[in-house]
Length: 317
Image: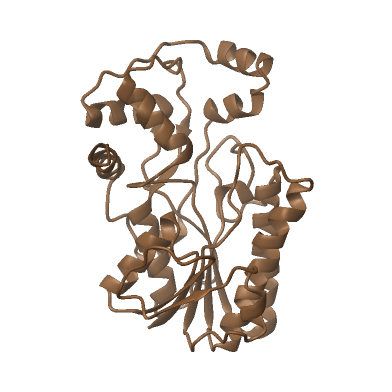
């Protein structure tokens, strides 16, 4: 199958392109800048203007059957843009529609759009988010992702293109950065963490599992339209995740059982109330459709995913 992938040299994109090549698909990579590439990728197209030129046919996207859209302005804890929502919309809404127009021009009949749990909201509604729950995003990133879902769905309906939307939670794996990498480093150094009383559960997805779910949606012979949640199907508590990381590092898990109310009060006093609230609250996804309708199960368990992540971290030292 001929598959075009935007954001192909990103964290998820690299894992996805490798998997698609491993399973004998013809891959075209769409990137903002040329970086390290899989030699098996047939073509690399640089599109650094939110795919506007590509949508206009200059350069022309080679014929493809499916577009997988990963490229995005990613979520940032701090954003120094004058108008963050406008900046997110320019990439995550306008850029998504431009990529869709280019793919439609190239003959694609299916688009797999990788959205985010943030399109649903910051916290869960007292239970795991279901795929048919009304989204309630609150920050510019989440709002832009939900608006992209809505705009892309309308585009597909108007142009006869099947749209599959994937909402992953926290993605981890070899090469992960940001907060997850910081947590691994803290556990390795033996930093005492005041999280021993946090029993909140968080959905996560190993990057290889996410790539496999995306591949399944892109190549499935039957219809796959609508929203699909994806995770490792095993939601750890925050303390359970830290203990698992510590075990793989052969370090003790230095967890202090500070009451959650104290943590939230301290976070509020330090001006980090929303961050602490997220850390100490559950955020789970109900991932019903992929297993039920497509027979998908994660190739790796969460324990295997964490082991691979920590192994890669140790090898990079």
